[in-house]
Image (cartoon, rainbow, N blue to C red):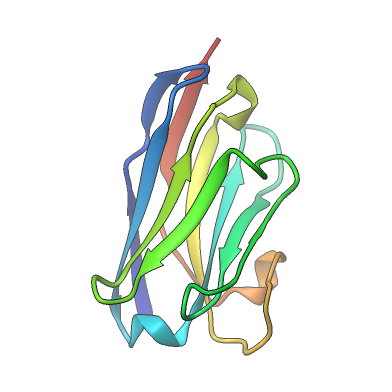
Length: 125
């Protein structure tokens, strides 16, 4: 089992940047492919980005490609999401998730085995 705790959310203006972190504890972090999802009010949780166990491969939703960067530091057991050029439509609760499945990338909720509690990101226009 792995425990995930997100941090770094907040209220920013359109065009600003924000970096989210996800601290992992429990099982060996480098065993998991990792992902970021988000959920806006009244909408389903959606895939944002994924990263492979070593960090050598990444995958993004079209809506964030070129603006967001997912990366990880396995020595620090931490996953990150650098968000640049934020838009009001990026407003959501952001969740990190861990997958034990060997395949990559994983973009579906059920591909992931462990979830954090989420951190709120609000982008004002």
